[in-house]
Image 1 (cartoon, rainbow, N blue to C red):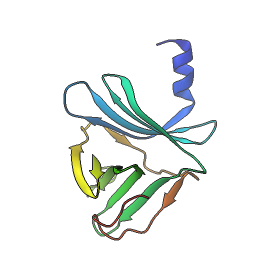
Image 2: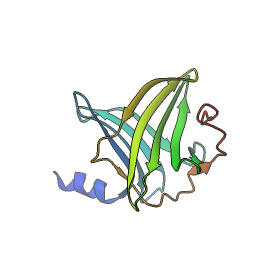
Image 3: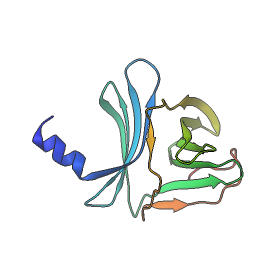
Length: 143
């Protein structure tokens, strides 16, 4: 790893990293740039970024929580697609599972469990996340 790459890594705080099963090592990640405070989203396959978005004052990441089921959803809408990660709290402290889903026109077209080496921060605080009311799993669209 080059010194420049290492410096870049030090200027970010990971929020969520979801490693996905399958060929090519797919990974979904959200991290906060410690300098700009913006949230960055990336989808990588084979180490190459296929989709990257920045969340800031004009484009905030959405979050909603189903308190009864202990699930927190982080997501966004892009065109006809909705991308979201759900974090399901376990019965023990720091126990959780996650999945990454994509909806198109309101229907789930991909749902993948994150691998056990995936990560989510205990407390995600950012001015660039807007909390939206939870209605039901069919009701949120992150628009």
